[in-house]
Length: 405
Ligand SMILES: [Zn+2]
Image: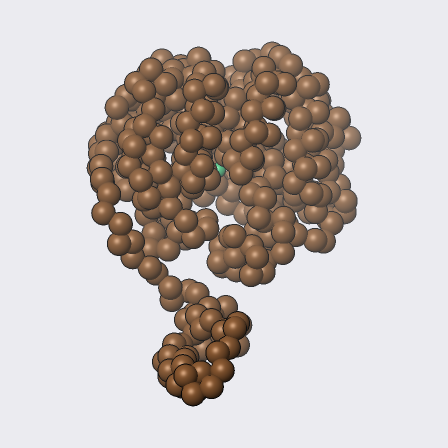
């Protein structure tokens, strides 16, 4: 049984005739057209899985050319998020170190950075389970203690929490997109808190003083801010995850979010910001380039955006040339994250990233999935030279995180 909603998603493949011929010939042609029309059936979009007939070079890159620091993974997550906000310190673990290490060794991943390390006792637990047991293979980032947001001296408490986390072994601070899109004045209700809210200023400064880079995710793909309709290039993804849409309601626009973020970068020049997902605007590398030119304290990772970079391979290649010292390797890898194939932690995912960065292969899938999960297109490799690969795979991360691979 096809629901009405799915039916509406169907693709009508019949084309309407524009200029109609006259006379007997026209009648014959009309009959032929009618037969053709009746034999063509609408096809439900979710059933459409075209196989490419293109014969092109296919390179399998099993191991990265140089040891990798994956600066963007999620090994632990909040045990109890509420309306998009991390409200308890407790963590849920998505994969054990013993489970992750064999994949890391096969794929030449020297180090994984677990960005969502949480805070307070949750963070201590994470560092004990991974960082301390396998030194150099895992590092964790701290996250803001949002449950304390309503305490009167939150700004000071939060700056202090960064220092405590630093002493416990946290390598940096992670800001999830909750800031700007979910965190509200009464934590889960009230007005949205702005990204450049001054209550966070002591936190940004503390990170600068302690040489802890801030991995920051602000806003989301541009298509998530437009209606989920037939013009949306990520229609299927948004239809599968309706809560990923930030269109309407009281959400700020993508531009407003990025402007507030930029004001934070300008106000805290001694704090290093790694702006995740290609500066959160992989659809507009011109904009990301402008930001990188304006803010020397900004760098980017490429996590979950090879789908964007790889569909504009010539622009992306120039971008890597120009900003080769400020681009970090990241994937957003999540153990057992099968619902989002573009970030599932497995061999296949890493092979796709390596193929994109290292080869000139054309028209291949950006995620291990039957249907491209972030929009129906394929990507092209950018064949980076060794010197740039080495910087992106590990040297830029080594410098920023003060680690040795
Ligand atoms: Zn992430």
